[in-house]
Length: 102
Image 1: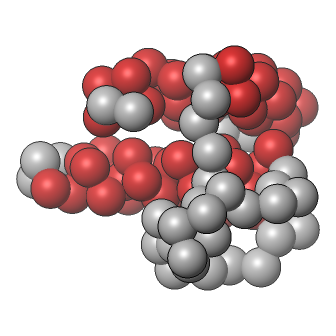
Image 2: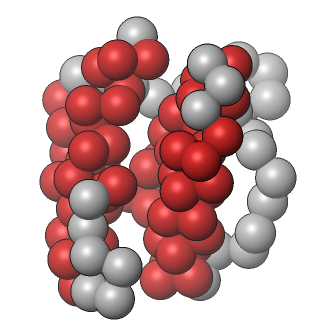
Image 3: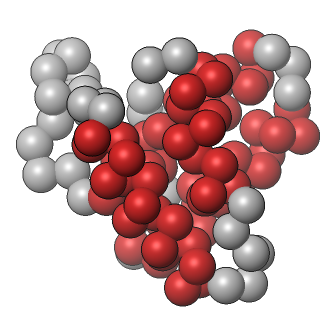
């Protein structure tokens, strides 16, 4: 998946209101569905498709990859924003905080 396509997929999440957790949750579900339709998968450490990945975990992994792409482009303010949204999603889903995993 190209960085541009990934950014477009994540647009609804990145534009969800800061204080509207319901809107963020809906954006996560829509984004996860779009990722699945495109065949995007989360890989395990061996490079194989991970099993049993929740929508939230898949979207957080995509946000981490997006943040990495932004960092390579020198867009540090956007990196911070993407990682903050990933943390919000993690809190919603009660996911443990992990450093970049993708």
